[in-house]
Amino acid sequence: MKHIEKGSEPSSLTAYNKKVSSTTKWKAFNRNVKNDVYESILHEQGYICCYCGISISRKRCHIEHYRPKSKYTHLTFTYTNLISSCQGEDEQRPTKPVHCGHKKGGWFDEQLMISPLDPNCSKYFRYSGAGEILPTEEPEHQQAAETTITMLALNINKLKKMRRKVVDGVIEATKGLSEKEIKKLAEAYLERDETQSYVPFWATVSYVMQQFY
Image (cartoon, rainbow, N blue to C red; front, side, top):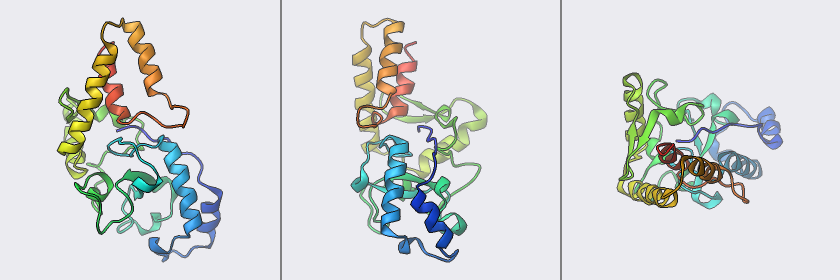
């Protein structure tokens, strides 16, 4: 999981929230304003999923309410609660196997859900050579990490296989390099590219590379 640094909300959303009723439903969200929100949060995240880190685009993601709109209705249109998760907009028939935002659904626990909005979120997880995402070894944080992994289905075979390829790629790329060279390579890997995108599974890449220096 990579930390998401929220920026300023789109001006269109600010204007919309001044007019919208507290009882307005998400389905009634103005399409143009919604598109502005999509563009903004996708850019903030570098076009990777807020939870698993898979590469996403406008057509392959949905706006995720970190605190579910079903329980936190007052946060339905609050920008700081809006992030972008993979697997498209259809909540009733999400792409299978279901994971991340659609898997989380209306579940939320302030103590057990690790937030990508937390600057320290990446410290709660480790990654194995087999592509598994594992909880931190720090006892006080293990339950939250394990619960988050389970509730987001972050260890389904699909994601493990994709992370395994990433791990193998990093290992291959660092063969024969000195620590200094690996650090330099890591800096390049972890920066946004010319399209302002981060490398898919950024957190996995970061973790694995740090094991070499």
